[in-house]
Length: 195
Picture (cartoon, rainbow, N blue to C red):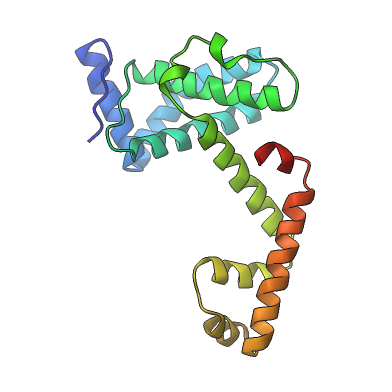
């Protein structure tokens, strides 16, 4: 169970409710988080050069970061849920603006509990995953299937059986598909920023 430490008992109960709901992937509670907190994130993003689509991306990235945080033993929130979540989303959005050079942003200047949360590496991981998924979709369906099997630790022998290949061809196909995928990833303009 996650134990937040906001300033009042009422805030603590609400924070626990939302954090446990996110941690347990409770659809009802996650929908409530969207309903209650998405408008403030939309306002933040729109006021800082974004739009509703940007806000939804930021919100979802924020939820993913919180989900990961709730799985860490000893994770605590020392403010209300809304304040903490807003700070996470604000950091995500300003980090995106900084990367697209739309603003200069100093991590130290936001004053919203960012010192308490180490989310920059998690944002980078999300961005790496998005890039990886996008480039994987650029491969042929056959290459995607071979790689998905390989990433799921299916043996080359089993891949050959599933795909109707010889074992030698399955090895070559797997190697060539990986090589093509990594070439696509490395040639993307985002790649240097994510290394």
